[in-house]
Image 1 (cartoon, rainbow, N blue to C red):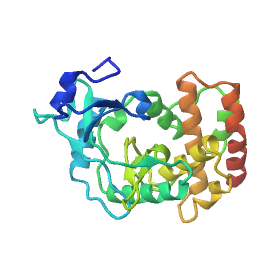
Image 2: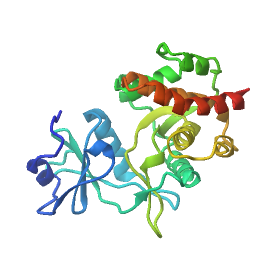
Image 3: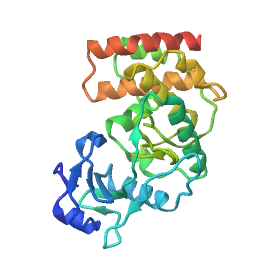
Length: 265
């Protein structure tokens, strides 16, 4: 696995970037690079990256969404020295367009709904994967009064699970005259509505979206209030596991938690 924060010239060459200027892109934790029509980013692990590229290579796009196509190296591999490559697609994220993000996510989830559960879901062990299991009562909750209050609202969820994108809000790009572009697929195996719930929780917590969205977006989504509870538990638990939770983050999340608990009751 690569340790550098910039792809080597060998990696750029392997993906056919030629002599195009190397440009560091915003987002992607500052580790994503563009060289002409090629975008190079670190993988989340070889198994996951190979699986995702195999899916996205042939995924049928619709009027509701598109995705960047993965690029094979000249060797035919998807991953070189811990890096993967995608086609450059123009567009920009807009976290204020929550309803449009949710619609694009719904279209994407419909397109991938028949895919089987991949094995790496069970072996992923980063803070996000751990937090996902904790939010769904598959692992022990960290000791925290706010999380314990949220956990009191957990009820059994009957909606079927499928592959979803668990980080939609900042990963839907908009360009005039083009379908929304879904990028940075973070795969989880949960009810399809969870993707929308996480996007709404993120919008309200971090981007000043009105609290009314907590109920508005969920119209027609089964078990919506319970998905909101799980979404907020997931985000808060991730911050705990990354050891960044502090009083300022507690203050930021507390009113959102109050609003969600009120909806459940």
